[in-house]
Every structure is written in structure tokens, then in C-alpha cells.
Image 1 (cartoon, rainbow, N blue to C red):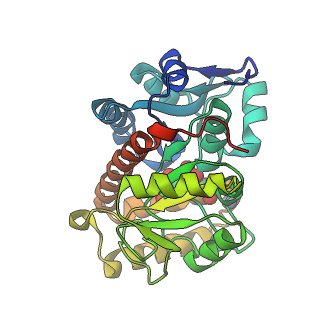
Image 2: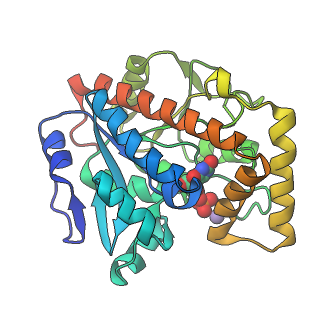
Length: 309
Ligand code: PSU
Ligand code: MN
């Protein structure tokens, strides 16, 4: 590992795993601080670490805790994070959080920055940010991070609170390959289908790992976005979730919500309006993505890319 500035703290267990070429999966924390409601966030944050361990994979939950960029948290620290988080941290928000000793959950973009510095190559999340419907100028920094961070990112596509077509167009421009896991379609988070196509379909963790190696062997340093549809049993029907997402979006416009608060506002309203049904779906796809990320991390091991570009 290249030497990191002192405000970066890589948990000992994670350091050891990376050094000995053992599988590590990075996990984001904005989903804990700004995505899931209490007390599910705490339960989930802890349970997910255990699930990875059961798979033989070391979890690295990433967050900023009292001004330190932390790679790997204990169960207790996850509680501390949730209790002390005041900010949502994307790429540009690290420096102010470090300077002011703040705590916050890292978004996909933020998590990728920190995970990359530590040398972690596989990351699991629920849904990525993208181009918003409310304003096409509101484009998540997640897309920018995906453009130049060599990492496998497992997600369930993106919520249709976003403009999915524009999001996919931009991913193409940014040269981020979009893989469908067991599907030809880009999944829309709560729904398995969006009517939009992915670049390429893969059906096994080994295929996904092989694709990523080939991509990086070419000299590319963008992410490989692996999109896994929500398990069928937990999918929410479009006729139920679409009107809810539309209502949340209308409310955001009416209340003039924008910038960093827009995504958390939409997530919270969708949770409220669906009376917990979206929450169950959300958890289901999160667990499912983390498991796949663990499998991909294991599949990458025989030829773990030590140093990319
Ligand atoms: N989409 C979800 N759930 C989430 C997020 C997005 O379905 O929790 C979070 C992720 O952390 C993502 C962030 O990186 O929101 C994007 O925020 P923004 O649009 O402000 O970049
Ligand atoms: Mn935004």
C-alpha cells in the first residue's frame, strides 16, 4: 500500500487482508446515514459485515468518523457513525469533514475514492446516483468517480427517481462498461426491468471478474459496473412504485429541494409513501449485492490486480 496521509485509518484486519491477497469488499455508509431509516440502518450495517465474514471475505465499511477517513469499521463504530454523522460525503466533502473533525456517511463516489486509495478493488452498494429528473444539471459525482476509479461496483442499477436513459448515456460517454448480471436489461432498483439495455451480460462471478481484468489489462482505469436485478420475490410492481417516485419528485420540486439534499429527500419520501414496502425491497437487494460482490472478490483472487495503470 502506498503511504496514506495520517487522517486515513485502514483497519488492521483490512490491511492484513490486502497485504496477503485475501478478498476484501468495500461498503458505503451514506446508505446508513442518509438512505435507510433507524433502527434498520444499524442492524443492516452490522449484519452485512457478518454476512461477508461468513463468506470468507473481509468487510471494509468506509466512512468519516470524527475527521478521520476510516477504511473498515467495527460494529461498535458503525453505531458511533450513525449517532454522530452530520454530513453526507462525496468526493469534494472529505477535506472539509477532515478539517472540521466531522462524521459522515460516504456516498458511492466518496467510498470509491477512499477504497481506491487503500487498494480495494470490489465495492457493493444498492443503487448508484445519476442524472436527476428534476434538473438535468444535477448529475451525481458518482458518475465521475466511476469514470476514473478502477473498481468493480456491484449495484441494482439506479432508482427511477433518476433519468435512467440520460444516466446510461453519460456512463457510455465516460467509458464505464455496464454489465447485466444474469440479465440483458439495466435494472431499475425496485424493478428488475427498465426497458433499457446493458452493454454485456455476465452470468457468473468468474465472468464478471474476468471482464474486469480484461478491461484493466487494456489500460482502462474506469470502473466496471455490475448490475444485478433485485430478487424476483422482493421486486415491487412498477404500477405501485412509479407513482410514489413521481410524487416524491413533484414534492421535491415544489419544496425547492436541490443539491446534496435531493437524493436523501427522495429516498426518505419513497420509504414513507410506500409504508415500508420499499424498505424491504431495498434491504433485499442490498444483501444480494453484497453477496455477489463477495463472490466476485473471491473470483478475482488468483490474479488480483496489484497495481493498475
Ligand atoms: N440511491 C439509492 N440509495 C442511496 C443512494 C442513492 O437508491 O442510498 C445514495 C448513495 O450513497 C449514492 C448517493 O452514492 O445517494 C448519491 O447522492 P447524490 O445524488 O447527491 O450524488
Ligand atoms: Mn446532486
